[in-house]
Length: 291
Ligand code: PDD
Image (tube, rainbow, N blue to C red; front, side, top):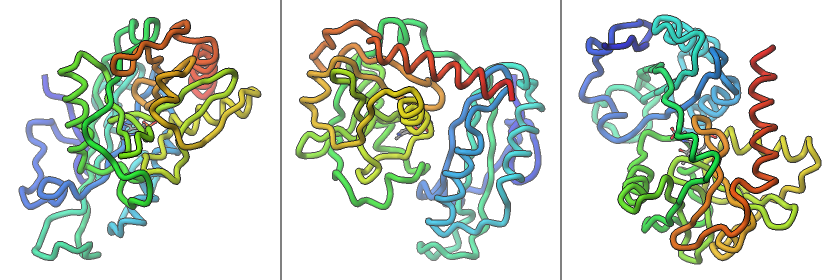
């Protein structure tokens, strides 16, 4: 049964939704996307996601002929048209630079295409949250810092799906990117945290990582609840010797990790601090749902 998608101002049945083959998102991955989810009809952190999207559109010189309200209305219309206003929904917003006309540089005349999907969300297995997941380190080695690319959620996501494939074939649920010096950056589709003693650690945004919305929510939860939190470079040995490790993303939320490659986390899974943060995160979701 085909759902309805939003494409450039219209809501159309999915199998009728067409984009031209010279679209730069298709040709070069020249486009941005946001993945969000709703809880019982309430889209969590929508503003933060739109903030990140519009920041990247500006920095990467896309022609912004629409505003946040336009996208917000389009998201709500797409969710409604798919009768998903009451449930848990997986939402993807895509903005490509537009139809290629020969110049590879970021010509301001390229008119972006906007596509929005809204699907009923398939929750991750309960075991992921109660027993934890396995993660591996990807063979893709990243530069530690200074790349202007990783700060943006780009359609050019091949490194990430390559790493996911590596994880899949090793029976793991996520892959993490390391640098040559074995610094831990982020997951293929998540940010990474570890706990040692009573302190929570995560890499700083000066490193080549996506400024995750959920990462930010967790940092605020720690600050608001007196949980010591440090943003500092993380070495691989830190996480394999950690008391607790967890990953964060908008769709999955906070997911405890039980094994990193062949190293099992010895402590309780999820650990006490991860459990506390998971509870506080869900109450933040509930709370924001009330407003
Ligand atoms: N991935 N890092 C990367 C490379 C990501 O792709 C994602 C999100 C994150 C977490 O960001 P956020 O908390 O804003 O979701 C970090 C999304 C879920 C995706 O796979 O589409």
